[in-house]
Amino acid sequence: MHDTPATATSVDLPAYGYTEHEFFLSGTATAFREDGAWDSDGRWAVADAGQAPYRTRLLVRAPQDPERFNGTVVVEWLNVSGNVDVDVEFGYMHPELLQGYAWVGVSAQAAGVNSTGGSPLGPDVVGLKAWDPQRYGPLHHPGDAYSYDIFSQAGAALRAPRGADPLAGLTVERLVAAGQSQSAMRMLTYVNAIHPRARVFDGFFVHSRAGFGAPIGSGTGLPKLDGPNGPAVVAPARIRTDVDVPVFQVITETELFELGGGAGPRSFVAARQPDTERIRTWEIAGAAHSDAHALRILHTQYTAQFGAVRDLSAMIPIVNDGPQAQVVSSALRALRTWVSDGVTPPSAEPIETTDSGIVRDRFGNARGGVRTPIVDVPIGSLTGETVHVPNNGATVALDTDTLASLYPDQETYVTRFSEATDRAVAAGFLRFEDGRTLVAAARSTRIGG
Picture (spheres, rainbow, N blue to C red):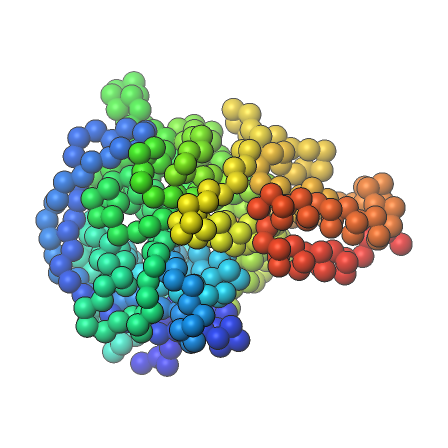
C-alpha cells in the first residue's frame, strides 16, 4: 500500500496552508442515451438507459483554516487521456485556487479506476485498482455511460453529504465544475445534456475543448452532418444558449484547428459562438493545449507516483511556454465573481483566423485573442500549433538582430512590457499579482548589450 493517494499533487500544499485528503463515494448511478436528434445548438435531450452500483473516489484539497474558505468549490473531472487520473486543471488553476477555494477531483471515468496498462506514459502507469490493490480494491466503476451521473452525485455529496463530510464542515456557497481537454469535452456534454435535469453546479469551466462533445453512452452522442451516404460526419457542437448558469470557455491556439484534426466541423473554429449573458469564451494568443507549465508539474507528479515514466522533462525546453496558466487563473477568478455576484467577465475578440489557419504577425505570434505582454512585447514566437510535438506548440526565440531593432536597451523592453502588462490587468485578462510576477521576470531577462 502506498503512503499517499493516487494523483497526489506535486504542488507544496502546506506552504499555502492547504491539506489533501481522499474519500470514497458509492451509490447507484444512471446511464443515459440520446433522446432524439442532437444538433449543433447543444439542446440535447437524454433518457435513462439503466442503473448500476458504483464505488469511486474523491480527492480533496482545502484550506486548513476554515476561516480562509471563500465558499467556492471547484470540482474537477479528472482527465484520463493517459489512461490514468490526472488533475490537469488543478495544475493550471492552483495559483488562484490556493487563495481560499476548495478543490475536489472526481474519478469519474472507468479508465482512471480500472486501467491495468496501455498508457502512453509508460507500462507502469496504471489505474487506481492496479496501482494499489489494497487501498483501491473495493472500487467499482461500471463504465463511462454512468460517468455523468457519478459526477453529479459527487457534486451533490459535497453540498449535502451523507455520512463522512469530504469538506469537513465547510459551508458550500458555490459549486463550479471544471475539466480540461478530454474532460472539457465531457463538460460540454454535461452542460448541454445533463445539467438541465441535474442542476447540481452553479457554473462551468470548459478548458481546451475541440469542436465537439464527448459521447453520452454506447452511441456517439454527437451531432452529425449529412455526408454522401447520409449523416456521418461529426458536426460542430456549441453551448446551448438557454443555459441558466455561467459557462466559461478558455481555448488555446491548438484547439482552433489541430485538436479536431484540422479545419472542418470538428475544429473549435467551427463551433465558435457569440458571448451571451451566460456564455464567455476567451481564446488565448500564444498558448498551447499542453504546455511547459503543465509538463513541469505532471512530470514531477508522474515520477513520484509511478517511478519510471516517459521523460516528459525532455519536452519542456522545446514546447510552448506561453501565458496560459496566468490567464486561466484570471478566468477562474472572474467566473467566481460571475457566479457569486452576477458580474459578467470581459469579452475578448477571437484569435484572427482564415478558413484553415491562424493569422500571425511578423514575429509569428497570433493576432487577436486574449492579449498578454508575452505576445504584445515579444522576445519569441509562441505557437500552439505543432512544431516538434503534437498539441504542445513551441516557443522560438527571436534572433539577436530582431531583438536589437525592437528594444535598443533593457529599459525600453521593460517599459514596454510593463505598459502591456498594465493593459492586460486593466482588461481583466491577468490578475494583478501575476502581472507583477511577469514584470519582475522581464526585468531579469537580458535584452541588448
